[in-house]
Amino acid sequence: MENFDIKLWLSDLDDHHLPKWEEFPDFELYMEQLVSLGNSYLACFSETPLTSSMINSYVKKGLMSRPEKKRYRAEHIAELIVISLLKTTYPLETIRNCIERVIRDEESVQIAYDNFSDRFNQTLHALYSGNDSISIKMPATKLECVSISEELAVRAVIYRLVSQKIMSSKNE
Image 1 (cartoon, one colour):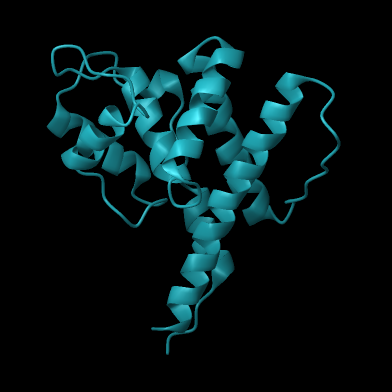
Image 2: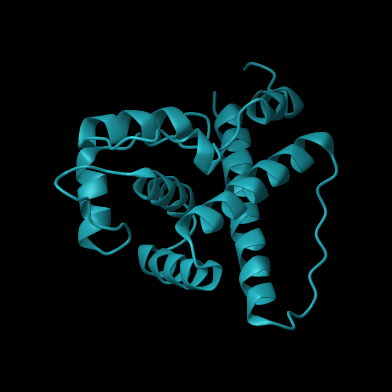
């Protein structure tokens, strides 16, 4: 069995990041392009590649907004990334409810996504650098409640990813 170095693997993950909204293409995409782009963004963070049938299912279940004339925009890319990461840890119904609540509170898909992306990237970097700590206090406001919930969701996804990698290395 090969000796697995978690720090080396985390270092490789630390070199990757979730894109910011401004990194998304500023033109509309067709399904095949959305699948390809989504898979490139999630390559290091997801073991299951995206498919067009997955995306169609997300739209049908109300997790993603409907495309206009079979064309997808930046908001669809953001929704797809968040759903793809959270679905490994949370039921789709929970994800849909959270997305609706966060977007309603943030007033913009762009702001909500950038906050998620920042939190994900910062948490990943903190885990790699050994500065991963969390202090949870009772939220005083609805916005604090959403922020803490998002923080814990991101951590759950990242910790699951690390745990899965460790377990799979022990089986090799």
